[in-house]
Length: 336
Image (cartoon, rainbow, N blue to C red; front, side, top):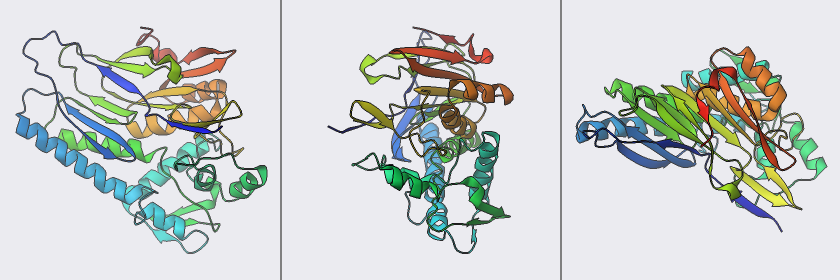
């Protein structure tokens, strides 16, 4: 029997209010980017109306960007680019060009573990539909012939996908970019501290109103545990987690999840959860996927080579969860 299970990438924020004059944040949650997005403003210097206006502007900016770069929006630049695969180059905006270039850079750094041309494989497995399935080997081989970041050519703002049937999916990087844009919008509105949580792509800025540092809980990677694996105490930063529990189905007692390895066409093995800390959500988002695909050993080596990146890698061995944690994150991490 096959069962599809979906779960939001879980990063919980804890607020221990001991300061009598703190009344709690102004916050709103809306559905964007195929997930629940929460924006919270922690700034008592702003009136409720000012905070609401700042949050509205941030959500508006996120919505505009989603309409440009989401593969699921038929009129987006990314969808149009995919429709023109194998044909002429397509002129994209500065924003889309910047995201594509950043993605190509991470692809080069990771030896192709991160690849935004993975769309044909994602479509084949159907993880983003109501009926995911395990394809046969011939189908996987056929789809892989349309995957390869080196077949994407960028000249200025003109982008060409060399082979017909190629499809771009920026799901591993664009959500983080959009979260960063929302934070920038909040700052432009005068917000001194807040959170933008894009379903696991999280960015916090400013000082915690009570404890100065923020406490972020990392979900235990096995849903049956229904608990936190650990807690991070952090200053302003961006965090993203990729886990094999987000979208998956069980078939023949085996778990098939949505984080695909571009080199094999099958779900990546080795990791069960990867949490990345960076200064921007776009980087945390992309490297969480990248490290997951690379596995614990190669993934940690990549993190060590990239200044400003820290990570917590969870893997399963003989039914137990093991950990790899970067040196810069050890003091911030604790087990509840």
